[in-house]
Image (cartoon, rainbow, N blue to C red; front, side, top):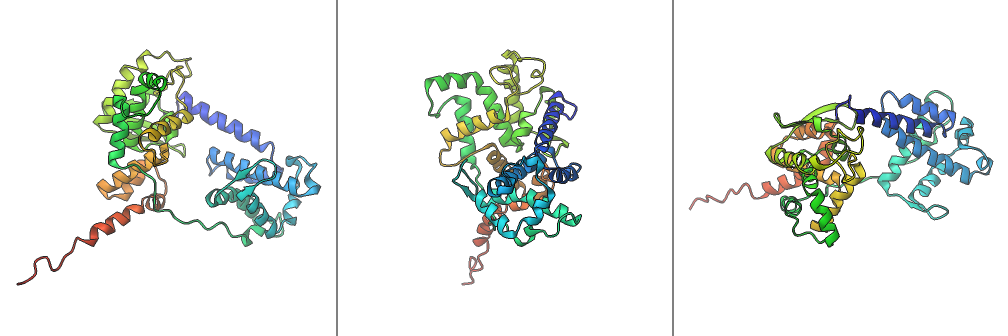
Length: 357
């Protein structure tokens, strides 16, 4: 999926259209904040910001009688001057659990994420002296603990899930499911092997075109999360399963239209396999083979990153291959490996092993 591919251009266009639709619902002062981020922030992130700000303004409408009959886009900037730290804390509690109207529940990490654009909105207008105070500075974000118990698959579990797909064995499924698997067996094996062997994101897998694969160099061209183009290399195992899929199952599928024709991975209807479909097939197989772990495509990425770090001990290499712009992300993510290193050190030195008699 090069940056000039039709799929990538269409994806970018649709994201921009979605952002504009959401921004049209926001007050002008909130639009100004989003506009200020456009050159430095991904469109997908700005879409999330817009959703989170709309949630906040709906909360204000519900709790403030003076705004209840006002369209969100008509809410004035002056409303920010009337908000106190206590109001923000009340909003935090609303995000945590809401039993009135539409039910929702969020954990600490999710709450902190949803408050991030709100903090940015207040800071933006406070710095420009558009508001008198910034109540957000007095509100503490939920304290997040770093979890060293990153969920990943062991080598035995990886081998088990690939063996099960390849041999259509050891999978608890109905006869109907087994027949469907037979139609997509090579595709599913190629996807799982590719993700476990390169650590690519589900969106990067979804965006792959046939022309992105170079079997002479055993490489593939992908578009990273931030929109940058990158080339990754793969081993002979991935080479073989991709070749097998392309020359068999994929060759017998008729693309639904020209738009879907370049895609590497097809659905049985001849459409580009969607992100949701890839996520569902990963979860489906994992639930059958590794029922005690909640495995998602991101956990396959964790599995690969951990295995690569274990083999090389090179955190910068892991960061580069996974496409982490900030190496601290990788260090935090694979900090759990340090425990293994410390355990190895526990019995490495024995001064009495060659005790003098």
